[in-house]
Amino acid sequence: MVTKASTIKIRLGWSILTEFFEPSNPTSIQDTLSNKNDSESDPELFFSYRERRWKVKDSYEGWGYKKSRFFWTGEVEIWDYRACNISLARALDDKLKIIIRRKKRQFSTFMEKVVEIRLMIGFDLEKIYRPWKDVYTFRESGEEGKICEEGPKERFVFQFNDNCWIWEWVKEGETLECSNVYKLYELIFKEISNPSKKSDSIFDVKDVKDTTSKKEKECSLKYIPVIYQPAVDSLKNFVRVVNCAHCKTVEGYLEIEVSIIFNNEQLRKHSFLNNVYQAFRYHRYGRILDIETFRIKLEDDVKGNKFIFHNIYSEKYDLKYDSIHGDSGYPVPEHNIKYYFNTEKHPVLFINTSNHAMAEYDSNHNLWKWEYVPWLDDTPVELGDKNRNLIEDEIEEKITKELKSKSLLFRLILKIEQKYRKVKNLVT
Image (cartoon, rainbow, N blue to C red; front, side, top):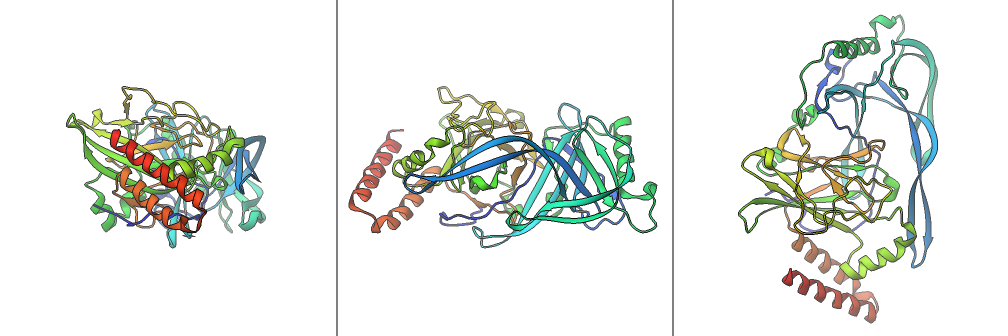
């Protein structure tokens, strides 16, 4: 068993945008380029993306709780990303995808150390244009919302689809035909003309394989999901802890009970109820943290493995929705696992709505996503092996201690709710 923390941390932390893709078997093309530094980032290559803009509007109302509302502005803007690694992949539908990947290290107040942020985004390749040279000014978002610029300078660049560009700065004496950008364009064009290996349902993520740690080897006997979540960091809605507990059912099936602890839960579509909802959750569950639990049912044949999302299935709903509780009836439906991460012991899960409803597929294709790989040494989330009841008991104990300074009425309400939950757990 691998347990990263013996207690649950209840505090605010940090977050940062990340990205995700849905292909399998990415074929790295960075190895063929010159001036390569490591397997995952080449400072020579930049990526520019014209994307839709969203905003989160905050206000403070009632009991001092913050209300946040997510919405699309209808505006578009081009943003630049440095030190990118480019890969190709064939998805299950056999479409060619271009994968943009980069990583960033940042101090986490929650983990109390420097962690690695994994950033990914992917696109179905619809069209591609021959490279050219132009003059460009690089723009990226800096600290406190400041815009950092570099240039104007000459660059080599090619475009794919309507809103994506891959490019590099021109080096003194270098011709377009000898540039990394041109070589990359040729490799992509060759893959279009002569398709390589077909894909399966496994995300072959090379850099994770190349950095196998002692901790990862210890986890190799466990089933641990990889989780993707829309990276709207200002909503403070991110994953903090992933617990995987093994159990056997009455029917004899082996199941993995996975409990995900989130920093908080902010309503979107019904954001005007957010303050009431947080107060209710505090009295009803003794916490503000949100915990969602699902199960992975394991069969002898891996093709028979299933997800069970009782009362938390997202169906086709996306981040704008905040009251989705699919699969609430009985018998509870079982869903085929659509993707795996490197091996069949790491099923892929998508958190799709703002109330943390989830599914085996992505409902937010246009949003960047966090990628949580819980067993890595420098991941921004904790990995544990506790079941849901133990997690609830630990959080109740901690909050009960913190409430000693509260009013008598407040403590009485919490005590009544605690007894109610214990009786309910015994009955169910």
